[in-house]
Image 1: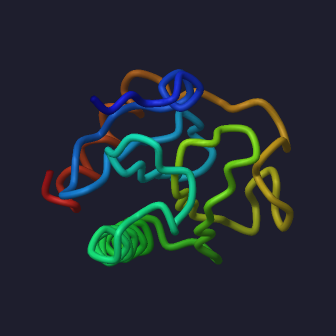
Image 2 (image 1 turned 180 degrees about the horizontal axis):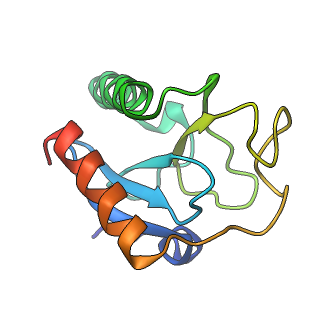
Length: 134
């Protein structure tokens, strides 16, 4: 049975499910930031996925990238798999703006997150779900 890492669970809001991955919104209103987590046990690296799963994850990531760029624009779209703190495989997708607090450096560890207000959260989740169609 799939179990989401507690740190991801505490820092994100579940938006829904694609074919392979759970779609999570990072609870930091400063950045449109989606994380994909394949709903599989014992996956830590791309190489832990079977070829078909890698292709599915790739396609899901491209969908998220297109949705984020279409909805929010931005100067850059950062996509990355880290795993230094949370070993469970998860793929970040972050829209970056020249005026965001961490620009041009990385967002990780820059500063404490600014949680969404209930209204902002409802709006952000709704627009992403509608764009992804989940």
